[in-house]
Length: 405
Image (cartoon, rainbow, N blue to C red; front, side, top):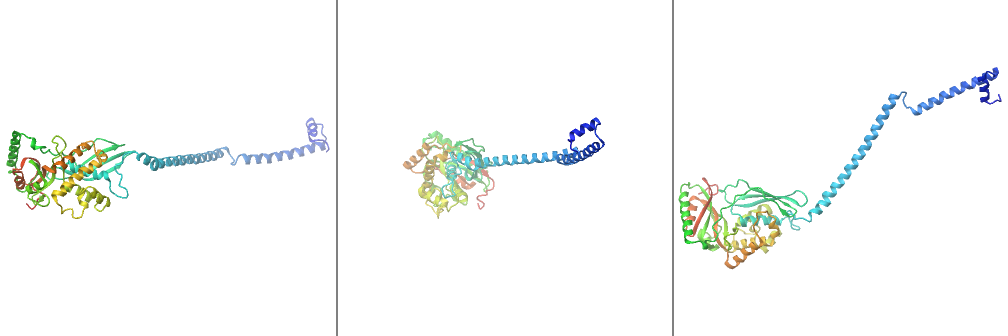
């Protein structure tokens, strides 16, 4: 067959093909049909992996879901990583850098564990408070340049209830917030008795006699806490003679807790000292072996007596004066820290300097004391001619302090 297959197909369709040509075309058509089936099967196997469309759709949806989950996981991990980096930069770089520019009450002295802010707090409490002393101070950071300060106090006079012994306040970027928690305020002793008229003196003396009379109703086991005002300010040596002691102002039936010092101002804030206040704070919460504290005592004599060897063997007339004036000078030299104590701190630099100048000119003179004693001893002390007036702050029917009385 030399003719083209297309010509033979045309003759086959017109019915003009010979028998031999007809047989040839039909054989070739059978071959083409078989080839077409093979091609179609190959096409089907490449396009469809499974024999029906439902199974194919199921496979494709699972594949798409898996791919989506994988992309979503990558995105989530990426976002989490970015957030972690941002948090790390803020936490360890930007926040500390920002805090560096604001006042930090937790800042310690180089190479030491001592926080000067805490020492100022203890001394400021001693100088202004007859009823309680600072026992612990906590500072918690609460944001950029923001700190929450918590002060815990203990009572100087057990017979005077201390219902709430904490106060808190905030320091926010160098500004002091309001104080929460109210501590009891001591009744003020009479300021400048030298300025009183004779009529006023007689009224105070009459009040003293009435108070002493009322105390006779208390049992002998009672403890009385109160304050007394001297008729005229007494030197430390004269106070020793008044209490009949050559050592500390305490015995089995009384203890003096705070000395009010004449600073030449009867209208301002009372200032005084309690030797044991910073003694206890330094010993219990700061420590006594710090070289920094030793250096402080060198610069400010007897500032923190618990850090000194033989601190209980003291010359009261000299060491008490040095302790009090050292407290004032230390507060004056650290006045920026003092201003950060709380809003109720009225100790200006001018007021502290005025007190120091007055003491330098007139020596340390005691206008009154806060003390506790048994009923008998209290009446004996207050009944003396040197005492102009007394104020009762609290009583206990059975003394926990003077159990041997």
